[in-house]
Image 1 (cartoon, rainbow, N blue to C red):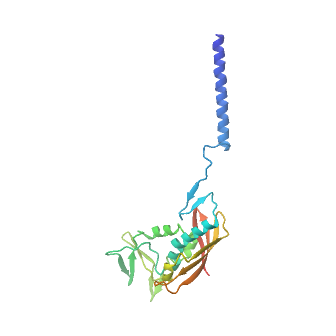
Image 2 (cartoon, one colour):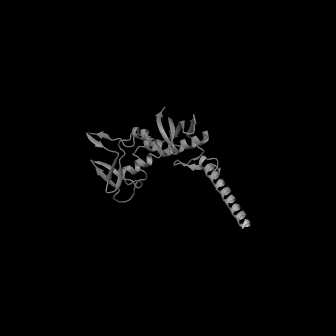
Image 3 (cartoon, rainbow, N blue to C red):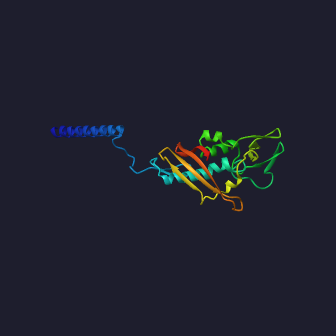
Length: 227
């Protein structure tokens, strides 16, 4: 009988020790003193294709971001001679006439909302609102819109851009992209875009000052100024 009592006491003591250990572990997890997560650096890739480690970037990484943004956003919005439409559809029934002006179907976007959502991956809402991508113009009393939706398709018109078509052929190898004031959430940039006509003659340099900010883990153009 005495032996049985001793065994019971041992079991009780063991249970108490286990309960104390579990309680301590709960407290340590709750306070963040210990964690099941590994200590390795979490590398995330944003929509601009740039790896961002712990939110810190170098000047070289900032300049790479700047180059991507210029290629994907600035040329489309400010400098092409036609409204941005992604890739144009080819073949039969890809154009329509509206008020005497020709519109071409987009092979990339089905509606204006899709196009705008794409551009918001590269530019802040405020910059996009002030850009040329959706401006209408008036010609001989007729309003010409950049885009027209019909039968589930987006059609684009380029009359109202007033841009420089030659800049769409900028020579990236000769262009420069310089970043400054780099922080984890913003930086400034100067772009010197070297471009030419379609015969690669008469090279010209356009200088552009921009600011870039980080929103929702993506780097976006925030301001744009031609110097």
